[in-house]
Amino acid sequence: ETGVTQTPRHLVMGMTNKKSLKCEQHLGHNAMYWYKQSAKKPLELMFVYSLEERVENNSVPSRFSPECPNSSHLFLHLHTLQPEDSALYLCASSQDGQGSYNEQFFGPGTRLTVL
Amino acid sequence: GQNIDQPTEMTATEGAIVQINCTYQTSGFNGLFWYQQHAGEAPTFLSYNVLDGLEEKGRFSSFLSRSKGYSYLLLKELQMKDSASYLCAVMDSNYQLIWGAGTKLIIKP
Image (cartoon, rainbow over all chains, first blue to last red; front, top):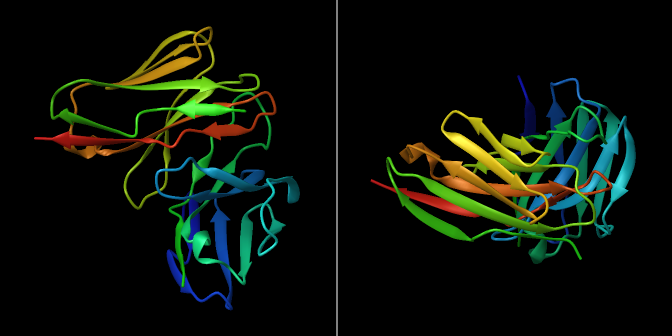
């Protein structure tokens, strides 16, 4: 595997379910990100981890819970979601969490539908 | 507040040239990125500008004017595979990326 991988690619869940999204990067990067992408809206940054420590949490509801056990893996735990949480969830990684040049490499995303 | 503006959708003809504009208002500036995103796929990096001027990379070029808060992505010799969304993003003073909503480019034969 190369680059950034995400599983599952598609997920349908009810509002009472608990599920987790998984991201893995094979690039040796130190920073990982979760984004939400809704149709015709800008990418919304949800969480940033740098060297396994959370450095950014953009007022995301507590029904989204991130976990970064090591610099290669990132999870997003979901529970009691709402239909408006349906979106494409993208994971990204970069060499460092900060810096004047910080190209981000994205995974293919998980298409989440909340019924 | 911080804001990135780009057209929602553009249409162009195969073999032609198209320019996608991006204007921004951000708290500080540490560079501007262009990404390409095909439907159902990951965004992929196209270009990075931090100084004024034109950066050319094959059929794609990106221009930046920091004084005007303006950038454009120029695509030449358009091919059908260039049909995608093009995302403009600015890195602000906190090194956080501020994203535009993307421009959907439709290429017609």
